[in-house]
Image (cartoon, rainbow, N blue to C red; front, side, top):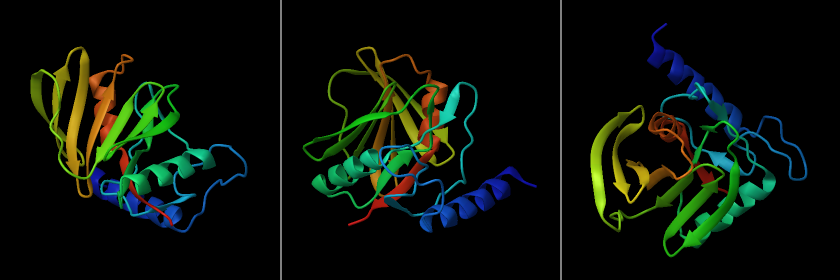
Length: 183
């Protein structure tokens, strides 16, 4: 079967499962798959399987609550959460800065905002990149490489100062899953 058809069918199945709230929901602060406290919108390209040194990310109830609070603070109707991350990565904390929401992971940051914000500082090494879920642009400010892209409901930057290779950050960007914070 064509890879795109397989990916689309997988995406539909996963979206249905997540939207129905099924999965390994546990009480307390234990990690659980995406879906629990956030409403799934569906995936554009199906579930992106982790490759190489990457792994599937899981989120706790506390993570969901912080994401929901931050998204409300910046008035974002849709938030993008990565399914995959670097090996050993997990969400550490969520920050709101003006109209920007930042998901800080151990090895990377996901920066989300509704209106286009140009990079600040001296930008160098700009390079266009084609991803499964759209076009992006690599750029460097100082020593930090960042991948910027426009998704249907937000602008997103994926970056790392912890040595995560470009290829892995591209896979993270491709695994971004749109969710809507529940009221």
